[in-house]
Amino acid sequence: MSNITINQLHMALCEANSILLTVHIRPDGDAIGSMLAFYEALIAQGKTVHMVVDDVIPEKFSFLKYIDYIHDVSYLETNAISVDMLMVLDASTYERIGRVGALCSAPIFNIDHHISNTKFADYLYLKSNFAATGEIITYLCKEWNWPITESMGTALYMAIATDCGFFKFSNTTAHTLEMASYCVAAGARPNVVSETIEAISADRLELTKQVMQTIGFYKHNTVATIELCPAVMAILGDDTDGFVDIIRNVDTVDIAILLKGESPNRTRISLRSKGTDVNAIAQQFGGGGHIRAAGCTIMKNIEEAKSELLEAIG
Ligand code: 5GP
Ligand code: MN
Image (cartoon, rainbow, N blue to C red; front, side, top):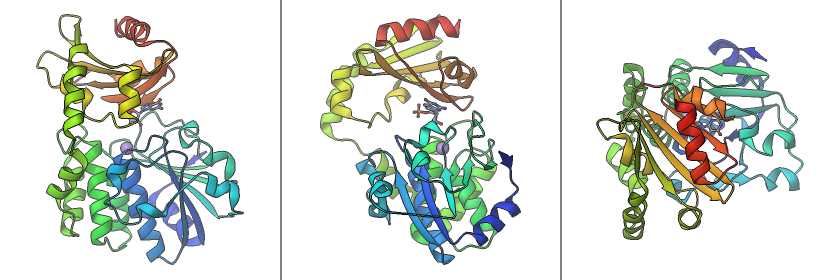
């Protein structure tokens, strides 16, 4: 692995004729928005570009241009695709790109902003002080004078906004806002993006009423938990955004924990904090992320996973 500079990244992209773009499994707004915008930018540079993700693409992103061009991983199994570069966006570990890694033999480049990045790629461009990979892509386009079209601006604005809680979280910097400003100048409409991304159904709100019964407080109300049992998870699928935000805003709460029961012995965890390093806690369970937003999976039921986490928090 080697860390590369912006110029080395530029040179490598200039030399590559064909590029396979991918992002992490359970793709979020930052992953999808960054990939769609980078796809459009690379096409404009005359490259042959493929987008492949080893997971389903959430319906809420369907308003974005080129979303239908994203292939499932079977695309690599059924087509003989040979590329000059595998470009991995917003993924911090090799495992998080699923089967795409094994199905593509090209040199791996990684553009990412996770402090927990395991340096799995052959060439890494890491900006851990950036709020989003979308912030990096916007920055690269500006530095290289690559035009940001309206559709790129919309995708990048969504990428940036979703990773910093629409500019509320501590990762929001002057640079984050500056990059978002470029996106808006390019034609992104903040109200349209947030209305589209944050829209929920009446059924979803009914379910939320039920889920709120599971909220618990620990350690003098500095830790709060909220649980999605396997039955609720079966209804929600991967669309679990917003639940952790219900508890993180409680004034006394430092650490907010969302426990997602994927099966009776597998619980996915989302951690958010106002001060504590939750990346360090997630790493104790084989996960990672950022200092104030991280995740991991614990091979236990919700109750047992919760006790282990509370013990690890100390
Ligand atoms: P979320 O709670 O939104 O799923 O994830 C919060 C942050 O932690 C994201 O930046 C995400 O990439 C990271 N993250 C979540 N789960 C895992 C995991 O299992 N492993 C690693 N390395 N990072 C994770
Ligand atoms: Mn991200």
